[in-house]
Image (tube, rainbow over all chains, first blue to last red; front, side, top):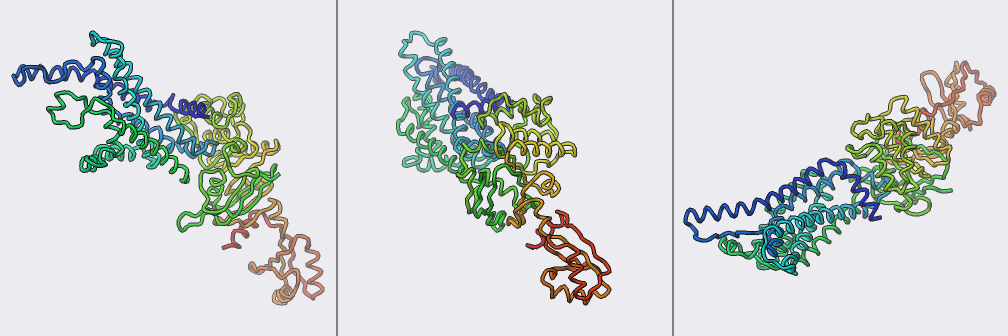
Length: 271
Length: 297
């Protein structure tokens, strides 16, 4: 059944130009950001030294070194997951706009299978992003690092796992919104408003109690800013070189909840 | 064999009762017409029976059990307008249908030939005309030759030639042993294609039976006499002919089909009525349906 669902999903996206365009824009934007960030940091360092503000480089001089590269690129990727979430929303709302959600039920899929297929989409999108980071990290790490052991290469790769669960959680959230709202534009709007405005208010207001365990906050706190002097200077309080187990657990719980809510809604609704 | 059993099925949308306490049983091998004007609950009924709309109350069973995915392969359902991915070709769209229904891809080409789309099989759905889209939807429905076909207004949007083709296809399928449930607001269509019919009005079943039965039950005899007043008195007191209506100066008497105009004439003669006009009129199916629909108003 799972193979059939994947085959059907593949048939749908294989020739969907909008899907591929958005998918590659995400990859391109992420790679350009990852590549450009070091140039930006170097340039800023130079400026600071030339103007005499600082005598030594304040910003990291090389973010592509093993083992910290995994943390660095995962942290940067955190800010790009919105693009993939839009792809996810389109994958779900397409089924409403082509009326194929209804049609597939009529043809013989169950409501459960409809939701499971989209969960697989979210998993595959997340895996593809991890693969991109893996290839980028290995390439740039090998080019830039000197004197590294095999252990250094793999030591911080758990950030890729954190990236996977963070992305899967966020895509599952986007999927749930799209299943509920049905319209792509409105779904994207709601996702943006919730992610960048709505949740931030209670997250900061109650940061000492439940604030850090709100859905998107938990996911984001899986990969905190690298604990470096710069972030110290900028007074960014949330920084850590570790992956916090409680946030991983919260992310997993939320992810399952988003799947369950999606299924609950689809199973109760007239389509 | 019993194919479908519907028990007290209802669907309400807020104040509106779209389907009201509907019960019927369908047997295999027949061609059923579900007839009713727009908004009579045909599509809502079929949507509930195919699992996309949840009944407010009531139950139904296909092949003796509640609707489950493994039974859906025995059902081919086409509701309203064709729903396909517009950026995929006819073949690619049917492959998705084949994947869902577990049908072999080798059946796709013959099906496309059957609905007259084989030449355009590689064209994207969005380039199709309305009639071609409709034919592809029929193709998707009959793919894998399901035992039971449910077709909601299958000739909608087709040109006369297309309508004739689709009707022929339905008749051919029924000869092949498929059970067909056809919803239509066109009497003519039901009359040409179906053997049995269910008439719906405002969500209520007002008739179920043979298509020919609708016109068999009753006939109308037109009469006129020089003394219509005396005629009416005789009719009122009669046992078999008291069901009449007046249309201009004609009196239309509804009689059961076993009574002939000769019976009536000799009866009236015996009561000293001489007729100046006597005509036997078989009601058309249309008149019967109109009466059925009007009766419940």
